[in-house]
Length: 158
Image 1 (cartoon, one colour):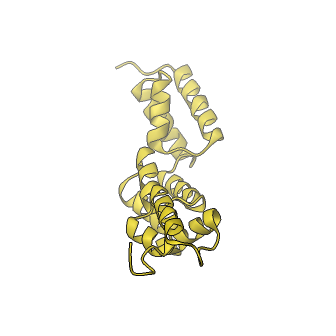
Image 2 (cartoon, rainbow, N blue to C red):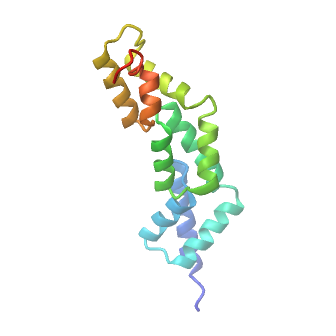
Image 3 (spheres, rainbow, N blue to C red):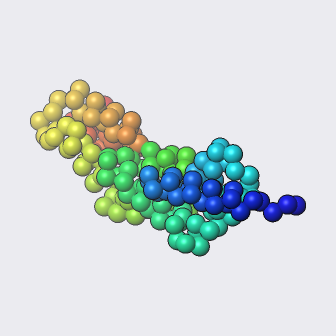
């Protein structure tokens, strides 16, 4: 098998650098982007290995950063897990990143998310509480957590 042109490797490394300068990326994302730019599999693999050797590419760090950022913006566990999976992060790395992002618990994150959107729901009527719960579900929280935090079940009914 012929060795890839060194110019291709340098071009791939520079392209990867430009992509990483924009934002952190997972190995899978970077591999996909470089392949779409027309670099062959061997050149892409060599570029990814070089970036990892330089500590510029780390899926665990990427997963922690991505999950924490999504949680800060009010995303729930289901949405965070889906976004990590879309970036090629699954298994232990995704679980650990999600655990770190939810260190105060899912309920606490859901409360903060609701407060940013609705303020205090103390005297809110049932309709407003249902809308608040639906908002949390759309943001990736479980229906159980959404209902509990929004107080949908506070008066004994749904």
